[in-house]
Length: 94
Image (tube, rainbow, N blue to C red; front, side, top):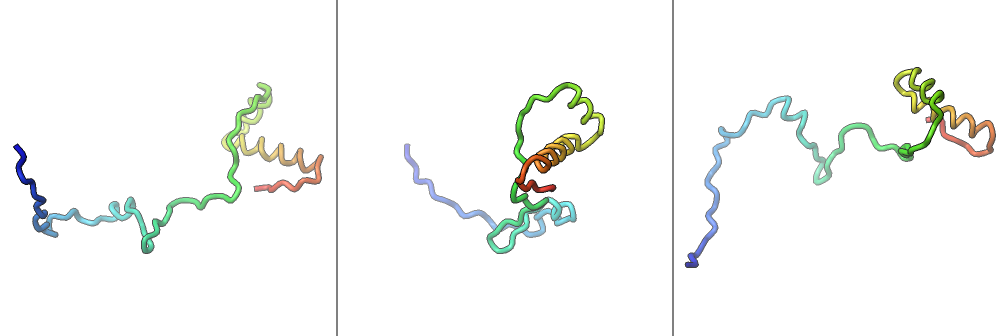
């Protein structure tokens, strides 16, 4: 049987039942300026690095990994130096 279903309005919400607004709440809350969401974290780079897959000799990988954290960045720097030494192409250093 079809009964008339009508939408009932929600009852009054007691503001005392709202959770307490703690520092932790504000740390994870989204921040807006008007309608625009403010993004957190680092700003995006104009030219971000591209993830690629290349095959390197075992000794090259061992050498650079042994230099510690940032070893892939150091490979990138060596390649940029190689390009600069052999080309008129300008390569950014950062």
